[in-house]
Length: 521
Length: 99
Image 1 (cartoon, each protein chain N blue to C red):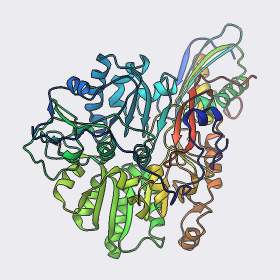
Image 2: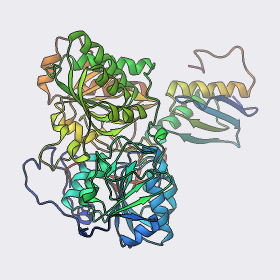
Image 3: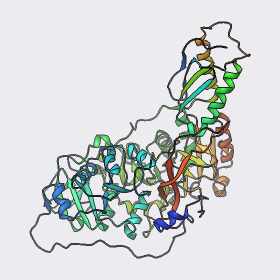
């Protein structure tokens, strides 16, 4: 059955998952539902401590068994130690058919690869996957389906009960013996525990894993004792120096600087750029450069950002310290300076993943965004974006908050070079749709800016600004004139993964890769 | 032209390709490893055969490791490898067999 972005979703996948096809970004707006709830074991006694000696013992106490769904957060990104540590113990105990429900997975999780091959892990639910697990999924090694959910989508899936988490493990930089958790003040800090908040509230069993036990009560707590069943102390939960994936220093790449300039020139022409505007950006070179350009104009015109959302890195913290931004609401810290900033600057606030992006609550922060600046692997002439599947057809990225912020923001801008190597970034049809074109308003490339024809208001607002405006088709044609017209990736038939829309419907499917075959002469 | 000895041109840098030519066994033997093989594998093969044809080569083992090179680069690397294989560094047919 064809969905609202024109992707054919196979009937057997709809039957297997019980899911509907994607019908549009606001299809569920205002539709009521009843939330799921966790099985809760009350603590009425006054014995005082929830400490358990080891991961093994806590797995036994939680009643670990085949087929369970286990929750994890990825706030330590490539420095995470908790997921592998827990899964090694699960593996040793001979448990099978585990569904991993992680807020994201990356190359730090490569050690669990053998557990996919031997059936310990048979299903994966994640924002995305980088590293060899992504390759393994694309090669068809996972027995079940991989479900890629946005950050908001994961919260929705857990709260509706579609992904009922049996045990969640929360790597907590500090904890007391009763399970008050904070992301700061320990040996290894991660700034916020936003993605675990939903696990705390909806998982049957909640286990805090910490390397810094502090006296009771550990206040302020991001996750409180009322949700935590057990506390385990280990040697090390994460390495914060590995949180930053790339050096976040200002780029000198002229192409990125050009795109950043175009982006800022566009932003300031829109009616949303005024005192108190809101903004989210990523950590790519062009995104950071555009934030720095924008700051210059904000200083010049004495315009302040009311709040910044995200995904926070040092450049946004610097603007907060300077007073150009009034408040930062933070769901994830991308570098150590931002972890340090949230501990120090009282206008830098922790919010939960649900508050950030869940489409099925009574209003997430993304809905209040004026601008979001995003990147993409591919953007097509329908403005659909792909951020998960690489040019070789292999799962290699994550949805993150891409579809959530794109849906929420009044002006969604995607910055992408017109080509990367020989790959035209602007193309006729993306390999895999992760963010629907209806939510993408502007595409900024090094060869010009295309505005989505749905946004006649933005076209009108910027028409006299001497911006290098082009149609998206013109941008594609420029790309193809340099690279040649690409053929589509050759996949085999088997579906190995689902790109889930933030509302739980199916946006697209990812198929198993196969070796390239030349056309007959 | 007849390929006399193995020769190589190009690098493994992004947007380049490395072409190796060796004396053939009576035909064109083509192998390709490319980061964009799905999108441009057929096109790269076409450019390779066209370039060899222009150079008058029908007996060669040619292998290309491509890192996303454009057609013009691929052509130039093939031409470079071929003329190296016959030790011809002067009087190159610019505008003729080399386009």
